[in-house]
Image (cartoon, rainbow, N blue to C red; front, side, top):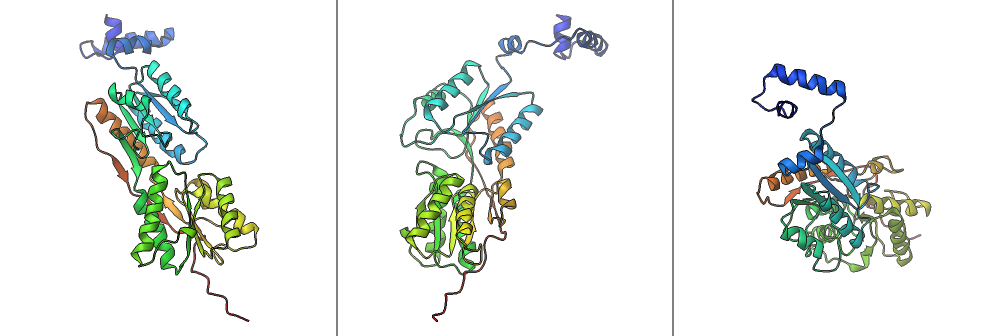
Length: 326
């Protein structure tokens, strides 16, 4: 009992006894059995983190913050990738639950369905869960951290309008994604604010990848919509679109301005540094941990929405003057 208490730093054991026992434990290479400790105190000191993929740049800083916050609080993290597949997401959640994690951080796989049995189960069992992103119809009650996407997108569109652009194309994200809907709504609000109607001919369905951005730019070029600026749902889509436009001999921003969203690392180092929104990715991770700690204390914290920052770089400039007839 004295050895056990010393290794747990119990207050009723003298400092000298603790020092001798800990020194002997080090010499013997003793490692505490965390599973046994978990059975005793009903905590595994494990968190589960499920994201679409570690290759998605936005999650690098979020997960770094989560791991750092967990480390300083004595927790370890189990990572899993959903790959944006509903079935895989459910299997990952169930594996985490089988490991008796103390809480879950999940970037949900957004879907058209209004219901999700696994999220309903998490809510019914009151598993401490923080969503890394917007809530949706199938997960409406959970604590969540997210960016103020409407305001951020509005700031980009307003920036382009102030540069004199009259026709601004918008490359939208996946239709199931709440953040994509909010970014489109921010674009619409800025245009309506200056007294103009939104032209649906300027809205193109893209997605979230460089390749999807390129395809949307090909479609825009073929339809000759007359856009002098392009606003994309994220930086990867913007980079894909700008890459195609540059390959066609257009100049960015002299012929067409391009703006993204997210401020991933490559956006600053693209051929034409990208105007974008700096998402508070590290702060989102810190805020997610703060919500988790409150959940573990039995509280139900509100949604945390953090404001992004407009970063203006070389990819946006004044609208080109109309060409004069010969």
